[in-house]
Amino acid sequence: MTIEIGRNRIARQTFGFDDVAIVPSALTLDEELVEVGWQLGDLTLPLPVLGAALDAISSPAFCTALGKLGALPVMFIEGVQTKYENPQAIIDQIIDADEQDVVRVIQEIYREPVKDDLILKRISEVKAGGAPCAVSVTPRNAERIARLIGPGGVDAYAVFATVTTVRHLSARYAAPNFPTIKDAIRAPLIIGNCVTYEAATELMEAGADAITVGVGPGAICTTRRVCGLGVPQITATADCAAARDDFARLTGRRVAIITDGGIRSGGDLCKAIAAGADAVMLGSRLATSVEAPAKGYSWGMATSSPTLPRGTRIHVGVSATLEQLLLGPARRDDGLMNYIGALKLCMSQCGARTLRDMQQAELVIAPSLPTEGKVEQRAQRVGMGR
Image 1 (spheres, helix red, strand yellow):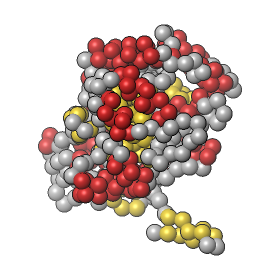
Image 2 (cartoon, helix red, strand yellow):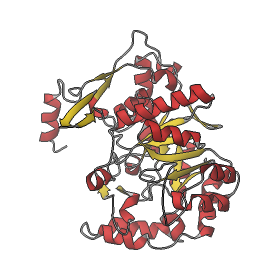
Image 3 (cartoon, helix red, strand yellow):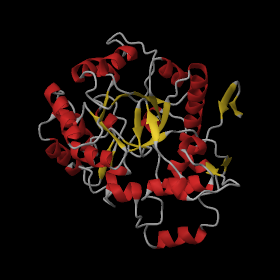
Image 4 (cartoon, one colour):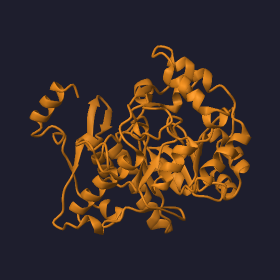
């Protein structure tokens, strides 16, 4: 639906997580019948969750712990883990920095160049822990680092930027050649981020095995405020999922859609799958885990931009182990623990045995859903300072 926002200016109406609800079906299932595994290229993963490529969480130890639970951790291979021999000391500097000075501190820290030997060392540390290893790089360095790592060196390879497209013009550097990267790395290729049908289609045609969806929705990203860019996640996911479905019909190759950012609870995760996602990427939510190296803090990787920071450091606290966050048991009632349990329950009420079944669930526009009948809950939480 389009709306006139001014003379000769038409805008399309879009929807975020709080704007929609999932409708239960006439068929329900026992949760034991629900399967939440998904496919990334030739890689089969038990849980539809990826750990975001954030230095606040993606240490080798954290990646190992998350991978052993069945999720896919993604390490930012151009961050503090590969710039410094002792990255924990650097992370401690960031979390100890004064609020008014933290952006300058982060900018200074990330000026340090990446060391190739540390790239290979961090990858080997994750692999030695017995977990799948995925890494992310910026488009500018994607081809060089892919050749450095070599065929089969990682289980998945991600090329991430605020927005990544096939058609990128620059006088300073060549746009990444995705077929060349894929040939060099010989692993599933994840490309992001993206929010439109057209851009998603072109990334699929270029060889992407998965596409991350989302520009600016995360708690630590300030892109929407700084630049005004972004599409609410339900609409963005649905548009990119439509591109996936059309591409699969034409080629027989199915590309995974990963909703990246803005997921605050199990309910949001369920809505992302219902909108068409095959998996979701969690960042600040996982930063609340005991295993996260930033000890209850999280910050956006674009905070380090020397000219236009587009991220912030936030305090999220430490609430639970990774296992409790993903698999339970939950110790709170707000959907911030046991994400997979919430997904399985929702799928069972929608008669969905698989994630693909869940992608067919009915969605309704329901902006009152978060507040309908919840006056007493809100009053109690305010009274308790929550």
